[in-house]
Picture: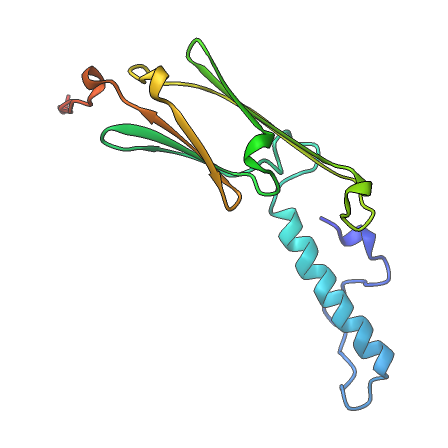
Amino acid sequence: MFGSLTPWKKRNPERTDVSRAHAHPLTDLRQQFDQLWERMVSDFGSLGRLDEPGWLSPRIDLADEEDRYVLRAEVPGFEPEDFDVKLSGNVLTIRAEHREDPRQGNGGFHRYGSFQESFTLPRGVQEEQIDAQYHSGVLEVRLPKAADASARRIEVKSS
């Protein structure tokens, strides 16, 4: 995928490497750098393409527990006051934005981060009892189920 970015490194299966005992120290350093670059590029390539929407989105899990749904989003770098969690109809929207001014003693860097995601809630959520907490980079939103929203087993028959 990124082979064209390293034109000096031609792939030649017949090439024999020079013995390390006779290699120049800079050649050895170059080979180590090339190996590091290849590992980094192969790991980066497994994330997806840069032009695909959501290729770097935070990990979000929704667990269906007996008495509630639990939504967990890994969104490090925020503070609890950076979040805006709203419910409109059956759509839960989570927004977070963090701005840090370089004059606030952070080493002279301007830092900015944002996140927004919306979810359609399943039926039977007690909207007035939804609770959200943020700790150690993980936002957890608990969505209690209504008493009549319990699951029932449906038998699968062969045809």
